[in-house]
Length: 487
Image 1: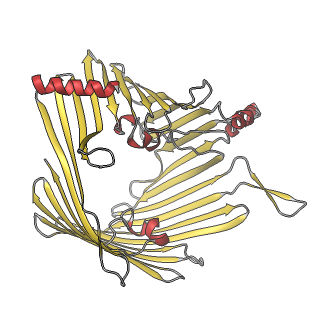
Image 2 (image 1 turned 60 degrees about the vertical axis):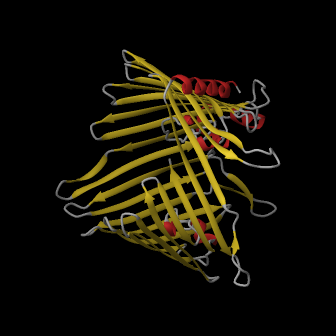
Image 3 (image 1 turned 30 degrees about the vertical axis):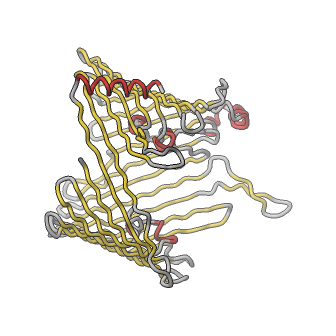
């Protein structure tokens, strides 16, 4: 509430004394769907969305932003309401290489971002309270190549948890040595001293000529989970990687070959997530270790690249399954994956790729294999772009699927664009297809009109690699008219 009052007061002051910018976005959509050949086409309720954004700079170091949209629901009010969906106030200053930037934000997700980690310590989609979080962010830096970020957020729209995120970075030797640490903590709504999940991590990045070494280690703590704490305390010192520790490292720059023969680049890595490691703010993996070796070869004087990647992982603490009433078996569920690829660039913008992915896994003592073959051809110029793929998923298995996909985008004129996507999948049950086509007309520099037929989401993520279509997706007969504009 205090942040909302501050933002409104600042806007009122800005309207009286300072310049203010206003812009917005609107989208109108209407459509019809034919769910069965026996029924008429069903028309959707017309949908219209409008949002307005306001920017202001009361002085050189201070700025604010607010976004709101109209909302009308007769169950809530007899008049239309203006809903504030996002807002922030920021202040920035720097003197002699020392500076800071502070932000108070409301329902904005981008302020949770920290620089990436190998262990994926932070997932902004988890800590932003489904876009409803509110809090503050402070960034500070100094002239000796160091910086710090601290973010606090309150889950007032959800479970009332609190999030604390801290990151410190430091560089040495002309940025050849980079190190830092994370402190991530989630306090639960109960407010009890032991009701939290905390992760502390440190990372080290070394650059030496063409070599690059990246290492990260993290330790977690969940005092509120008694079973985890008891299990963690029972591990001996020589069982450290079974406990609440996660570790990952990677080396790049290794190569074999000569200029005339070409070079084969090799990038090995290793990771481990302990059995009692828990991270509820990011990638929450546990009881797993493994390694990978990613390699690629550039054919000299040819636009050809060969890729071969291998990975292996299994459980640190094995599972126990019963074979019969008198015997048991310890299993670690190992998984191996071998990926090979040939990528070729032809003349006139044509590109081709053939890949084979071989995945072998054990689950509860049962062996499964997933072999995928993919071929791809694409071409692109200033007039059009074409992508064609053919994939055999789970080759040789009873659930094998053959998937064909084509995408075509054409610039008809400066105002008119055409796009179409078609896919067909065949398996032992039968065949399914999906077809989507779209005409886009840019009426002016800030308005666009779309006419669509078919489901636009199937195949959107990787064409034939889209598991949503490969598993159960099928054609939907629907028409859409969409109008978008900016002002």
